[in-house]
Image (cartoon, helix red, strand yellow):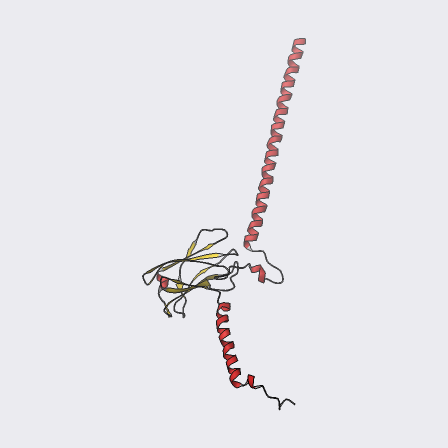
Length: 219
């Protein structure tokens, strides 16, 4: 039934080939940005590509720096000996913490530094030192236009979300504060009660003394 059907000339072999090439070109332009959410920047004449080693980055899960260095299309090796990596949490303005940079085995020009992000949100990566004698000091901050933020792991948990350590710590601290407040209130009440008893006892003593004095005068 379909053997005698033929494609219009507009969809002949040449046109199909052109359409296929255009589709491949479109994919080549879109796929890298979708697959690799990293920031690319030229620093000191070197091309740096920075992001999280594991994406999506999840709160409480092991991750690390993903740093790729090249110059003129050639991978730069040996930078782990002269570079320093520091990370900080943007929202809490936490103090930057340094981790050693190490080369990724089997991938020249690629470097990492292991860490566990314990809070979701934005992170700032500072890379300083020198590359082949060229001073380097650049900060890369996660965000919608650079590389992905750290996401709450509860977003991917099924069937129920398990409380994170920070949430449990917060609950324990809140409970501890409440217990401390109740303890302080009980201590205050106890002190007031003791003071009241003392005042009452003094009053009784004064009253008894006055009674004795009055009886003595009558006698």
